[in-house]
Image (cartoon, rainbow, N blue to C red; front, side):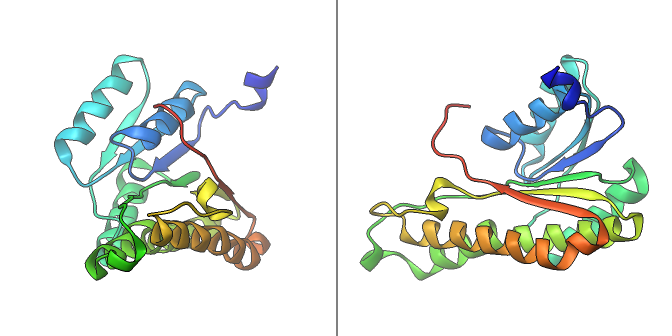
Length: 194
C-alpha cells in the first residue's frame, strides 16, 4: 500500500548534487518508485558513473552537468532539460557542502563558498524550475535542510547558518508559490550512511 501511494510513474525529477552521497541515494529512491531522474553535478565522470549505475538497474536517467552556484548556468541548464528531456515535475535541491573549523578561524572564502553552494544554489535552481512549473499549475520542490537547521554544533556555525537559511527560504517559496499550485517542503536529515 505504501509503495502505491508513492508511485511516481510518469514523473520527472531533477536532483542537484546527485553524482554521489545523499543526492544519489535520493535519485535512486525516486527512480525506484518509477520517476525518470535527471542527475546534476559539476564532475562529468562522476555523473556518468552514477547514471550508469541507475541505468543498470533498469531506471530512466538523464544527466545535466551544470554548476548550480552560477545563476546563468542554472537558467540555461534548466531550460535545456525542459526543452530536450521534458518537464520537471519534482525538484530536489540537494547540492551542498560542509567545511569544519573553529568559528574564529573560519576563512572568508569558505564562508562565501558555503553560501553559494548551500543557499544560492537552492534559490537559483528553485527559481528557474518554478518559472516552468508555475504556468503548468503544479510541481514539487524539496529542499534538503539539515538537523543543523534547528541546532548548532562546534566547528560548523557557518554550515548551520546556511541550513537555517534553507529552512526559511522554503517557507518563503511556499508563501510565494503555493498559490500557483506548487508544493514546497524541506527535509532535515541528520547523519546517515549512504
